[in-house]
Length: 76
Image 1 (cartoon, rainbow, N blue to C red):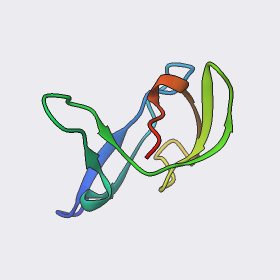
Image 2 (image 1 turned 90 degrees about the vertical axis):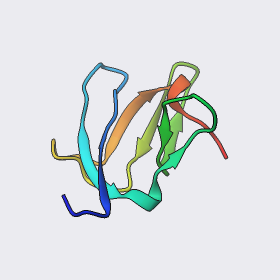
Image 3 (image 1 turned 135 degrees about the vertical axis):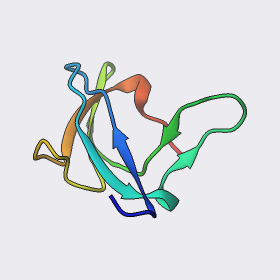
């Protein structure tokens, strides 16, 4: 990890937690006391319960496409 990068881990719909590094300036913090942060992804598919997204970087586990719970998606 470089000094301008942050470690990212996400929880998939299946409960796995893939991780990767990305530039810190690409991560958006929510306002107030909300500890969550957002990263830019491309939504490939979406249903009522989940969304399939491509991540900005390949994960250490090998993929850059993951299925996440729909509640994890925030649209700008």
